[in-house]
Length: 111
Length: 112
Image (cartoon, rainbow over all chains, first blue to last red; front, side, top):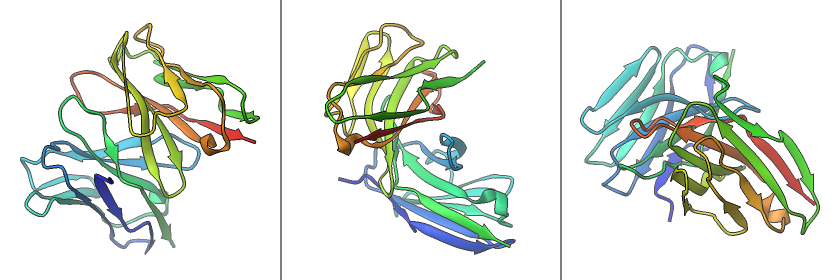
């Protein structure tokens, strides 16, 4: 049973455009929703995270939008740059449990 | 701080061989985890530990053993390697008071 469903699998965006990656979850006990960024040959690194008490969190060009009733959250990358090209993973967890990851989205930002 | 370190970086095994993937962290984190990453499958949890002497199974534990005798180290043992265990393995750690996981650089394992 896949607890966190991520889409799309891959995404190509023009430089300066907006990249949007979506995730849906099933377990209403989840209370922590991070996004991880992974460059080729490296381990994933935390990019941004949100808890269900807010509907949006912004850090620079990266924004998480959270819809508790729909059990969905998304990552928006504004003014996408070639350096943003990476694989992005959404994840979810509830207290004292390990993270459950989505299958990942490979983002390519082309000039 | 070196953070989370993993050795070796690359490894090739023959079917049936055993080996241990090493993971160490110098941040005094209570939680440590092992994941495998396969194309199109994301990161799947193998085993995790909430502290020295305590381990538990994740989503895909079969064929792997772990132990946690110290806070710093969390080795992953493959008892009898199979081609299905060809993957990239990541170790991660986190402190007990946050949810942020810090990942190591990974070990790329090929089983022939």
